[in-house]
Length: 215
Image 1 (cartoon, one colour):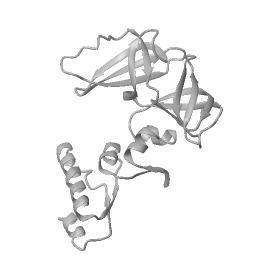
Image 2: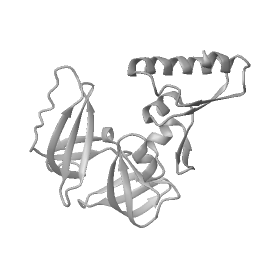
Image 3: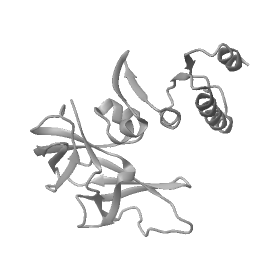
Image 4: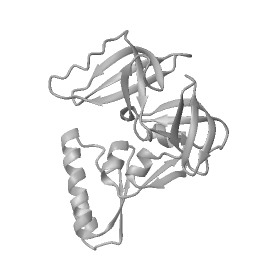
């Protein structure tokens, strides 16, 4: 009823401050779709405030990530998720692995890096990132894959396997310092990828898997 009253005078902008926070999970998902439908039908700009990162990505055409009253990054949901500009944004929106790397060179938006393993990889980098020295590389869990030991850019020991139904998370203790790396793979019916805790594994990174973060 409150939403109907707010829409009745057809405002140019409607502010919704965490309107779904008190709803249970299934009703919240239904209302997300209903709000998107209403916004599309009315053409009114909705300013939607939420602390739920998934909700921000699924409901928005444009996202502004804020911290301490300052906007840290503005972009489409895909830009915010796939191209976070800084560590706060990468850490706040979704799960992320952070690796220390040495910047070897950059051409346009493509950076060449050396990981602690000694392997060289390529990653995306904006003009605002450092062009030399030690940098932070962000890699989403679903943008990497397990491989036999000796293959891939990283190697380590598989410490834990967590089954979530839709996907499985693999926790790897990396060689050379004990940093943790998490991979997320979507499950297929009756699939057994054949990995067990304690296995020695490699980690493959796709060509565009990483994002160099600015300071």
